[in-house]
Amino acid sequence: MTVGIKDGLKLFGIVVVFACAAFVCTFFLNFYLDALAVRDRVEEASLPLYEAQLLSAKLTCLISGLCLMLVSVVLIAFYVKLYLDGHAKQIGILKALGVSDWKIASGFWVFGLSVFIGGAVGFGGGYAFAPVVYESMSGDGLPEVPLRFHGELLFFLVILPFLCFSALAVLYALLKLRLPVSALLRGKEGKPVNSRPPKKQRAFLTELFFGTLKSRPALAFFVAFACFCFSAMLQMGFSMRDLASEAMGITVAVMGVLLAACSLLLSMTMLVRSNARTIALMRACGYRLTDYWAAVLGGYHIPAFIGFATGTVYQYGLLKLMLGLVFRDVEIPDYSFDFALFGVVFAVFVLSYELTTVLFTLSARKISVRSLAVE
Amino acid sequence: MILAENLCKFYGSGDAACAALKDVSLEIGKGEFAVVLGQSGSGKSTLLSVLSGLEKPDGGRVVCDGEEITAMTEKQLTRFRKGAVGFVFQQYFLLPHLTVEGNVRLCADLAGNKDYGEIVRAVGLWEKRKRRPAELSGGEQQRVSIARALAKNPKVLFLDEPTGALDEATGRSVLDLLRRAQEELGFTSVMVTHNPSIADMADRVVVMNSGKIAEIRTNAQKKTAFEIGW
Image (cartoon, each protein chain N blue to C red):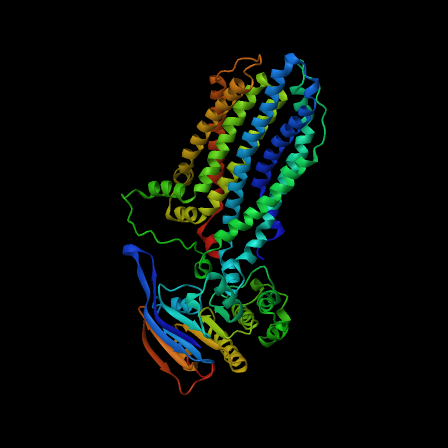
């Protein structure tokens, strides 16, 4: 009733994340299904490598696909909450007039459209990229695996997620709509007043630093996720050049940069938008932009660096697991932690992260108290 | 028509808890026009929210048109609001993306009322029915809000400072419109206001102070919207 098709198509973050999930799953699952069909033609000596490749396709698909799908779940919940917060008054009006929660929530199915678009793009991309994967996985005594289209993958990677995510958006909206009408009409979230006094008195900027970080845990998660993707997939991509193929390595690295850029831009935009009043008032009171940069965006350095560190450990652990468990019977180049690569990726990360925060700080110059008053 | 007994409402918790309503009891008869008067923070808007089922009280009960709304589930309350009551707010609360006609039709469709066009005509906005709220003046927006409430053929109309954001002339015309609609349709109305002059139009006046009822009086001689002071 308040949500339109256009709102469902605006969720660019979900489109990108889900496209990546569908992309990875499409070519690995397709390879898995096609490789199963040529099992009889595999020579005895090449069986360990064949089994290892099947297992690696399954594992990569399971770990990466599942991680990205979980992020999509968080993203869709985040978007639903964001929409409800932004339209609290309108929803309050509808509820006051007697429109049921179910009727309001049912409109949120359109949020699933972003998953459908992402899934379709990823699925198409996965098939376009599949010949590269097939080529990198053949040879060494393995028979050529012919590329076949598997219609069931279209259902499991595009249609089923669209239905599930649509249902998820509706149910989550239904859950979040359980607020008193009067609270919605006032544009508040209806949270109980915290009657506890603060443990200790802090300076305004310090209080703002911790307050901003604590008030939006979803944004902290997305910043951490962005840095995780950057760190993990860039390092993994370059390490995979020797272990798999150059094309695979580049694909993983590009996907990492894309996911990181998309998540970071989304969270920074939301952060600046949700702190528009604070920024305008700080400027009106005479604070400098650097104060704002340090106090509002500064807090997000913590999840950013945690995300980067986790990504480094994750990519190292995943590659070690693959080589130790999956390829234990196969002769492949040795892999150890690449400190030089880590140093380069870390330097690029620090530079790009700080540059992004500076650019977003500068964009906050446009927000004035007057513009907010007019609004 | 409306019976409230021992209503209590608190906001916040612990040391920060604040009592907005303290043991409030009142009765409003069918077809009456009741005005709740009080200073800012006296609890009058909270009383309206509780009487209309927008908020649940922490104690006491409200019976409206024979149904105890304080005992209703959220689903039953939605059904109650859908059928029996209309709301008019100070901030109009119109849906910005809908036209005048769309806003009125929203409620008319809920109540299964097909004659919404007549209501738009009655509030004098037929010529502007294709406009959106942003293209209307404050008084016109409030007329749309009234038309929207009336489109449901409500048994009770709750009005929260309907003239609070309007100038005197527009406020009087809105009050006159409400009074005429009530005379014609016979619904009960409860209006919250801080303007004591409006009380001269009411059948019953409830004066609130610090979350308690300070006075309840009835008017033998009611005035019209153009006779009251402002």
